[in-house]
Image 1 (cartoon, helix red, strand yellow):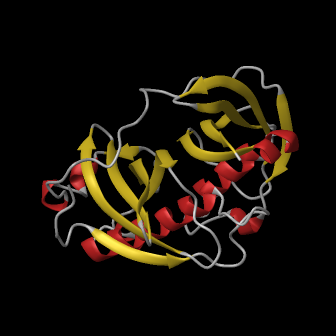
Image 2 (cartoon, one colour):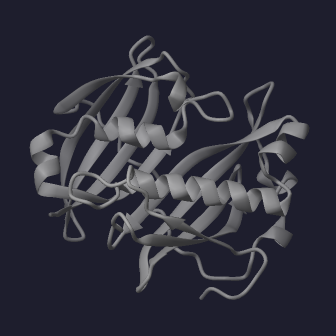
Length: 253
């Protein structure tokens, strides 16, 4: 149950004309963009945003995110998000989200973040940055659907991707939401015409930069909770390093 607290941040986003797909609804990665924005806004107000960590020689890196939507909003609608730090465990700091439209709750999400040392690129204990004073006493929005996302060894469908300069973020590496978009590029058009992606669980394993080339792959993974699922992988072609692994859930249009 959400309670009033300065540790719970809210912001409303208008769905803009460039965000929807051909059917008029936004993609789930557009929702992820909103989540990334509100997380940054909240961290700044609490004193552990980008500029605060930069002064101490650190930056936040998203390690894993799980987003599930009951409904995807359309152009002209608004999307109201709530977010809060939801706990520290070992080397990750968790942050949760609730997503509403004008009629009520339409989505939930949880995410794990790592505070990385700029020089060593090693993760630091989040308790050094985010202590229990910043974590409200409220229920979790969502729990991760498993300890790890299964690895996809040989994908049935593939796509070649090259990261652009515009795909990089303020930390000078490819933005995490773009990785989700890269993974979805491998999904065949026939599948996208029949199904709509309603949930993603994405695990970030390595950094990459503009100019890097990748092989995105995916395969059907069977039904789960009344939805079809796919497993995804994204490897950098230069060194075959795994950049991302992802699972997605799809409902028939």
